[in-house]
Every structure is written in C-alpha cells, then in structure tokens.
Length: 118
Image (cartoon, rainbow, N blue to C red; front, side, top):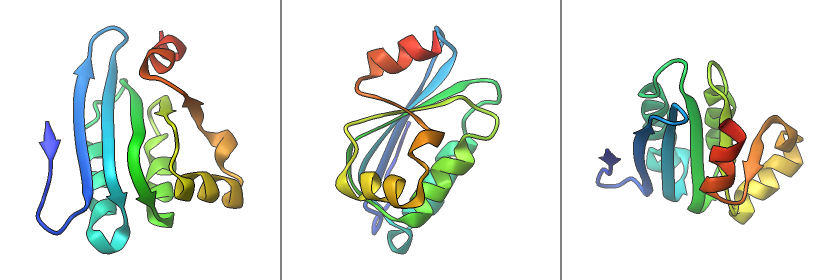
C-alpha cells in the first residue's frame, strides 16, 4: 500500500511478509514534522500487526527531523525493529547526538534484515 498526500514529502510504501512474519516498510523523501511526515509515519506504524516484526528501509530517505526519530523509537514497542540503510546524514547525526544508535538494529540490506529476523 502506498500513502502519498499533496503537500507531504514523505513517501511510505509497505507490504506484509509471511516468512518471516514481518511488515516491510519503505520510506522515501523527507520525514519532517512541518510537512506532515510524522503523522503519516505514525499512521503507517499503526497498521503493523501486533506480533509481526518491522523492517524499515530508509535508503531513499533524504532528510528526517527529531519527531521522526521519536516515531522510530516508539515503533520499537511491541515489535522487533530493523532499520535498513544507508542512513541519510540527518538520521546519522540524530542517532549520534541523541545516543540512540544502539537502540536500533541497523542492517545494510533487506536480505541482511530478514536474516536477523529469521
């Protein structure tokens, strides 16, 4: 399912996998509070079934702000969360400045993320 709205610069596409049981989400563009990106991300995370792992591919994400990082931190509740990179410079910086890099399992590819969950 793709979620795109006029005036919002965050693209969210996701699919459900059966083996392993996971929700795979692709983010692209800019995840910024002032563009409505955080609300869209929260809505996408709300569609993740309880008990399913969550893989978030941020390779096409160009920018993110602090509320985006908060949304990612919140998404860890009730799910194993794996982030697939490479990470954009703003996400790298936010993870380092806040000391939250260690809170996430960051993998270079979707195949590596699936292996971590399998």
